[in-house]
Image (cartoon, rainbow, N blue to C red; front, side, top):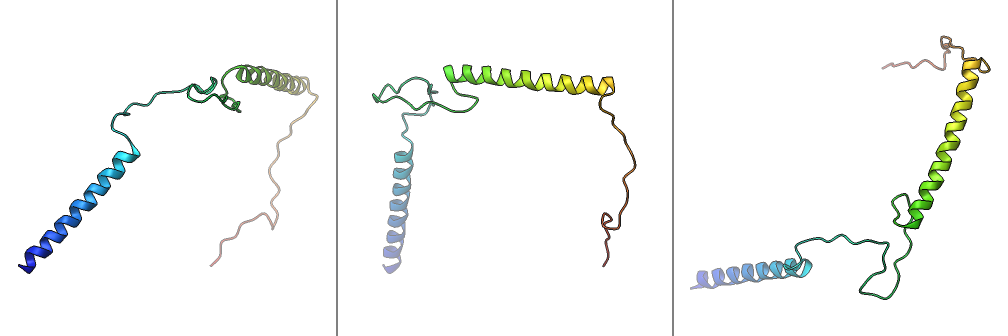
Length: 114
């Protein structure tokens, strides 16, 4: 008789724990909402009357993205002009590149000793 009582208590405890686990899983993720829907951050939220804050970074949506791309194009054109200037100096001889063997100093050597 004592063994049956112990078995009933253990089985009841397992059933309660499994029910609690199932309840937590259902509460975290409802069974009805199985699909994810993408939302645009550039539009105001339809559920709330407040406006979403403007997004920052390269992937911003809307006019900020257009402004950022225009700024990036201006900066890239500046880099292109600087590169063209350096290339012109190299080709005309205004800049000379000289390669030589590195000088070996006692401090530069790496010694492995045990």
